[in-house]
Image (cartoon, rainbow, N blue to C red; front, side, top):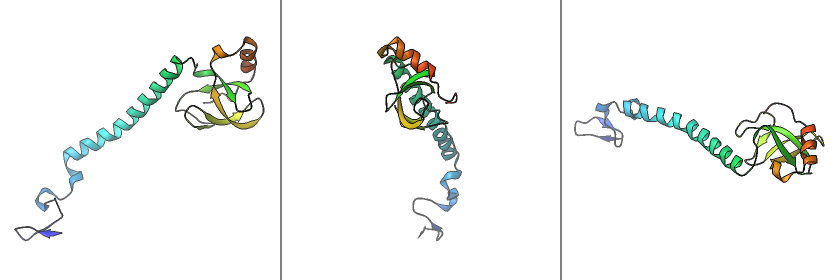
Length: 132
């Protein structure tokens, strides 16, 4: 704290005549609202970009996504980027329960074009819990 010319104490860079609190100014209130709105918008845009890129690479994300666990089991699950209620999202992989071997494992989406007809049929026979 330093004393001004008029003898009143003021904090460094702030005068007491302007209220002394920067957060009460209309500019500060507007910028904090913009920041609080921009974070969800950035997150939604990133998820949409990830989904678009995955689909362009041949991965079919959505309600009947074929996934493979680390032991090689194939099953279908609901794969919506950013929405996980039954597993832990690790980006391109997810930690969740394998419905084939009844074990916890990292699962990753599989391109349906890389599978044979028999593998696709086998995957559709083993469905995960029907929540994302």
